[in-house]
Length: 185
Image (tube, rainbow, N blue to C red):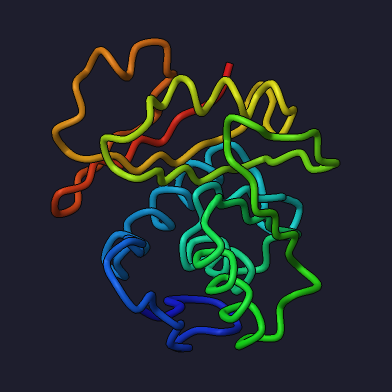
């Protein structure tokens, strides 16, 4: 797993020792950021003005990719101590701590943070939580608002009734994963 673009391009990130954390593949990251570039370009939005929430951050790979590409700031949230430590280690690797906030929090017990994301990544453990419940918690904590753009990774087999109420901009499949690009309302 590496940073695929930006000022830290090619840097290999630290990986988890086991399969409890599922890092997003380089192939999926390339698709995510190509699609995101297209969406932001149509909206005339620029990376360097935007804040990012990397929720269920795991290794921090998606948020770190954002830092490498010049996003303003990234907030990393995960409930796993292993994931938080791995994210910190990867941020130290590229000396990017000043661009990051890191919080060990359960999504059901979010406290109000002074962070408002323009873009958010949501990559929960497959088949463990309902996306609607997570999004409601993030909204209630005021981490996102109307018109935030979200990228949600789910198993390809996700039932369509779990996606009701989402304003889906694009839908992509890579390997066993379904990626939804949404706009909150």
